[in-house]
Image 1 (cartoon, rainbow, N blue to C red):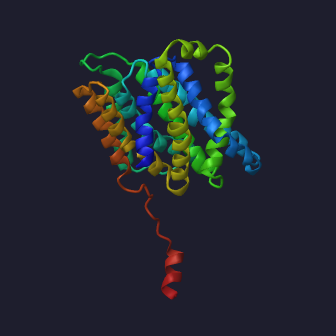
Image 2: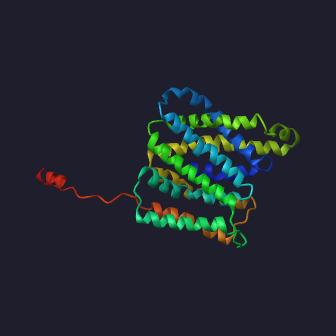
Image 3: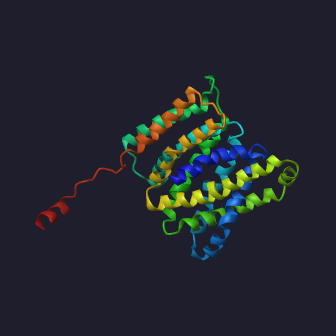
Length: 297
């Protein structure tokens, strides 16, 4: 529930940050503030990382933090925060697909039906505008790509980093992508000039720093912990409630949700629920030898 509230409000914080700052500045500030908070803990844990775990952590940093931060910021220049939160609910569906394709995880017929329903909702949100007109919304596709990144990130953590603590995974992976953010902030960004000329710039900066420290650093620690103690699908299912928080905050901020968008959101959530309402466990195969041994016992 805590993760739902923190992540559900992150879309509104992105929106407030974009009032003054460019999408690239919002993403870079978000990453830098999150990495700075966890840097002391990450530096103390570097000796716990062995061999190929470095490459996995780099992949986790890119797919779980770097790419989504920029994709979400660019998408919200043209999308309401509530709609962005609804599209984020695709994460569990893509987690299933990535797990099946990359890690040979078993997928039931019920899961396939749920995936189909969820994608039907995605098509509505991506192709139907709020007024009912049909046109491809490229910015909505940015969110779809971001949820695919999250799905890859989840499966990597579950399959390759089961013995590292959530703080180590989050802190070190953020530290590894921090140079990208710093290169931009110390180079072409125009943040200093904006802070000196507009009081609103400080409020937008506060929103972004809160987004980085809570919506990224704290949220990723909680999320990575869920991935380790439960299945990747269960952890990603926190996105069931995120759209409710995101849409509610958006409406309180004056955003209007159309019937078409409500229909698309409902299909996505119903599809995710359908795909996960029963454990996807392959049917047990009879073992005559074991049965005979059990009978003798």
